[in-house]
Amino acid sequence: MQTRREMLGRSAAVAAMLGSLGMLPQVAQAAYASAAFDAKTMADVMKALGTGTPVESKDVALQAPDIAENGAVVPLGCSTALPGVKRLLLLVEKNPSMLCAMFDITDAIDANVNTRVKMGQSSNVFAVALMGDGKVLYAVKEVKVTLGGCGG
Image 1 (cartoon, rainbow, N blue to C red):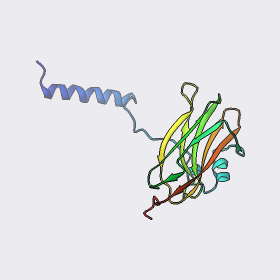
Image 2: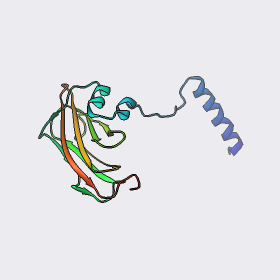
Image 3: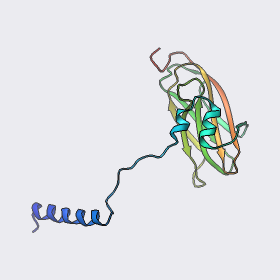
Image 4: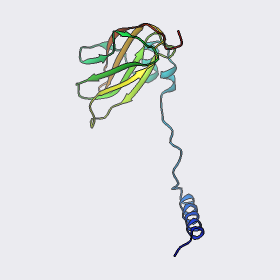
């Protein structure tokens, strides 16, 4: 029968062997475009992402409430049935950081995302679809916030 001490010793030996081969797991870090999240305008967001000028389209759907009673948790959704979508973005015009969410989309999944964002005040909300052929399409809706998400 193997004792705990022997098992720990063997585990340490296996870990040392994996470490010497460079096979130990590394800390996972999400890669994101920090310049895009720091942008204050839609033009700056598009420039940071290296895309063209967005064009309004009926093919992009934005799900957002007309009135958000609590700006701290505003449910937003974005979807499109167009083929070739590479990325979906949710932007809030009057937030300190306009870009609220960015989702990478592959052909294996539907281009339909939902999340909750924080809104400090009433503002236009944009759902943007970045297409594989370089087109940038968006939908916009005004969301009125009765209680700001920043405490007021």
